[in-house]
Length: 145
Image 1 (cartoon, helix red, strand yellow):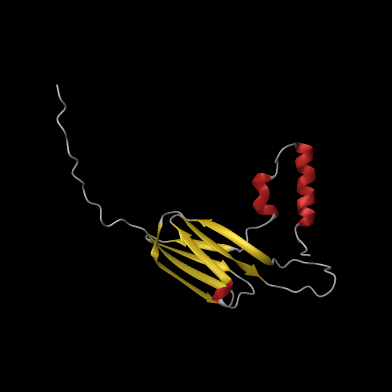
Image 2 (cartoon, rainbow, N blue to C red):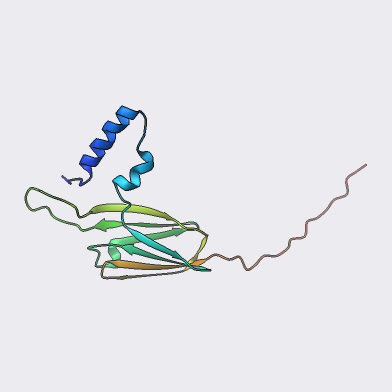
């Protein structure tokens, strides 16, 4: 059984939702449970650099990285910790994760590089710029009178 370090916060949130009605705290979800894994995204003119914090990841085969136009998705498992005894305090985020990162512009799927070193992944993405913009002649038919 996995211990959720945010369980007390979830209970507190649910009680406040019942008191205030509806999903009062949905706008604050990112403060209650931070997105996993943590990222920094930097934009340059025609390039994006994304740093992804992956503690416990030693091998690139432990992570799956997908790109689709305006988004970057990462999947894997952080700190595969085997519990030894009763958990008294648990702050390290661990377990399976999947995170989709929205990108500020479309990126090329054929020009991406990703490196992993000491639990930090660097992903370099390039803006998708259409080069083959040709004018297409449209046939005009005379309408019958």
